[in-house]
Amino acid sequence: MPQLNILKTYKIFIGGAFPRTESGRYYKVTDAKNNLLANACLSSRKDFRNAVVAARKAFEGWSKKTHFNRGQILYRMAEMLEGRRSQFKEEIMAQGSTPLQAEKEIQLSIERCVYYSGWCDKYSALYSSVNPVASAHFNFSVPEPMGVVSVIAPEDSSLLGLLSVILPVIAGGNVCVVLASETKPLCSITFAEVLATSDLPAGVVNILTGKSKELHTHFSNHMDVNAVIYCRDNQAEQKTIEENASINVKRSFCWHKDWSSNEHQNPYLIMDLQEIKTTWHPIESIGIGGAKY
Image 1 (cartoon, one colour):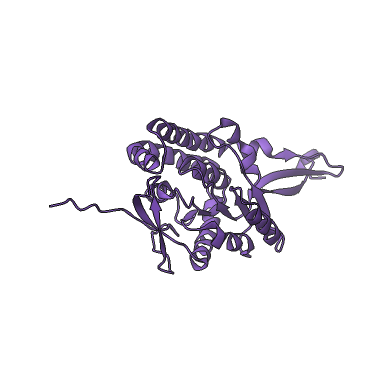
Image 2 (cartoon, one colour):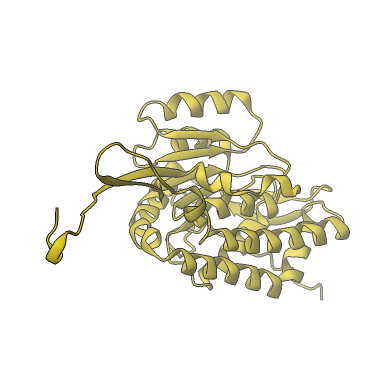
């Protein structure tokens, strides 16, 4: 009797849960030889809107966590990736990488989590400032997270590219909705399983699968999204995103990078998604007998 081959069902990840797409649509994920690897959800506009609602709900709690605690949570992700190394390796290889390439991608992904976990409690001190003013005041400028960030992740990277764009977003206290690679989506949902069982609050990271040509417009024109990041090379989509982002003056970024290079992990990616808040405080002088002047 032939052995039954049960393929994994890859759902989407919204608000800490794994729902199926509300449209009921899916698409086939195949390898280079056109062998079926899995069925993945074909996310819709409604799925994206649900994910934005979940992200906005999570923003206040995540942004108010101490920077040190955010660093602890990102480090926990690295620990859990290490524990599931063999599973990620199998999925990366199934999507066309050699064993050596798969091992390298996993190792770099783990190290990237550690890298950004270390920056969580340092970027604020480094990029804050005490500003000189003429009046009798202290004037401080400090970075604060923007809010909800929509991300269209790199198409040619299954795990490393996904992590490389999510980590600087959440390290800075933001929350995100991410569209994973269409042709290499397997690791994205497995990574979502890591997030769901880590200390990351529900809704901080939401991961959709599907087609950029259907969703890029919604990622860029939703009025409750504060910034959009595009990591692919379709010039028409990039132009549409930039035009839509201007409607409510949200920031738009095109991150086209070689994510396997350490040159493209840096705190400036965290700072891209920060607002600078300036605070004034009067200087009080203490005179004789404790009187204030």
